[in-house]
Length: 400
Image (cartoon, rainbow, N blue to C red):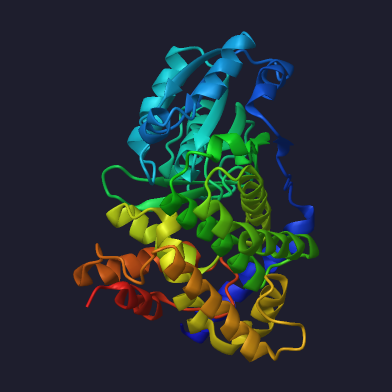
């Protein structure tokens, strides 16, 4: 990256860091069970809910406890279950039509990040019917009150239940972009471990490593606060203590509960401190090839950490100590390498490889420009890279 662009990026990021204490960030109110929702919905003067989820979750029967609770509480509801991985503008349009025609006044995002992102985007469109999602991509372009949004994560990874972002893929161009504004932060986050018990081991692993990526990228960036560092450390510790158990024994409710907490804390950390190039590259892969976001993050994470080099060794040492990988007396370099190796070992235990087979060499230039546009100047990464420099990660991920 040329020097002028580097200066511009760092000035932009510094301005946002200075503004952090004055921005209206908030954490969603945590709810422990779906059974508490009817009272909460009525308290917010709502009585007709659109539940946004996906077909897989519906087939697994994960929505049944929610449906039963809403029905018993006298809450009218409709379910849209066609959300796809990396939700599209077509999904949003379909769900919005149901919301409007059904006279709904609240939205529940039930599932992984895709369902929650779709729910947020529908809320945005409902509140601003005259403006396209494309025109609201980027930062602080919504600035209006949204319908009540409740997030119920069924995976412990995306952190979407805490964030001010909705990531949407254009159904025609396959370009993936984020809408970021404070009204998108859900009012309530339901951390109910029982809805995660049926999650298959592979998805448990990739979404857990998604949460790890959130925490790590937030922690190693240049826009951290005392609060985000604390949240990121908590998330990393909980993930290293519980993800293997949740992967091996999906019915371990304590491990599931702790992973939901880890995802929440990681989400709180990156909502304020942002992510980095792992996410920018992963988003481009999700948009172009529909690669699941958690999987892309898991595959990429150690490669990007290695590319940052010594600039992050001191911070990775703190993460390694928190995770129980290294002791406090270890050198920065030794502990950092231990942490990266622990991530690689985690991938191996979970059967997560080092390649993304969908990548085509002729797409790399376009994809790296998407990643560059997303990340720069917004993400306060430890080492700045331009589109050409980001190409290295796509080549690393290609199958030989």
